[in-house]
Length: 174
Image (tube, rainbow, N blue to C red; front, side, top):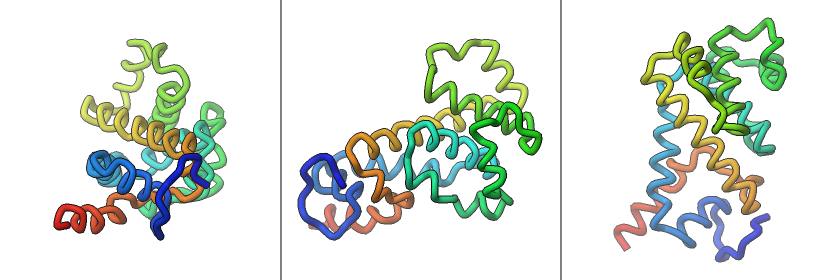
């Protein structure tokens, strides 16, 4: 249940909070969500970092939901069970481990991500991939905390961009 007063609507709380309370922000949020959904990162890496951020944010919906691309890429529940203890996992690649570590450090202690870690990350990812990975992680951290703090996480719409698209068109025409 939302922790802020929202107008009565039949839409999800996250859609309601943005579309009716702050519609000027809805387009930007939708664009960021769509960009992350279209990420060119390996679907396994994307899902593994998303899961680590969900664990840190304690986002119940994100913990239970799986991206279709990750399922198609063979992400299993057994593999996701290893995300929190990634450092000792024998089923995760070195690339996946460093990506999960990056998500964890970004989420918990970003000021202490040093050049040595960025160099280690660079051994597995191109500069463009690092930029994309950083923005993907940042989106999940920010949106997860936004929804959790405001009590919107229980009704989280993970396909926000698609759901709000029709409402944006209606609002622009109205």
